[in-house]
Length: 109
Image: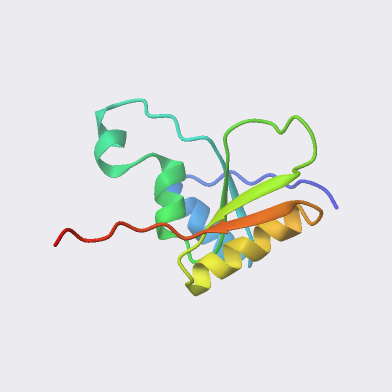
């Protein structure tokens, strides 16, 4: 297994999502979002928009791990997408302890 590189010209989010679809990617990995300008505050960074519009799991990497992943917290909403993300996380860290968290805000009465 190796790394292949492809350069897509055009709008980054569409290019990433199109490539993921064309290659039947099981997981999209993107780097930490970095807000550089006013536009990113309103429409989101490339990483945020990829995560928002993707039909497959997106792994956003903030920094290198110090060691193998030992504890993983997975935010879940009991949807099919959350289930796929949890499965992808398990593939990345099969020996880790997993904690699934479902958080929601109770509407004010």
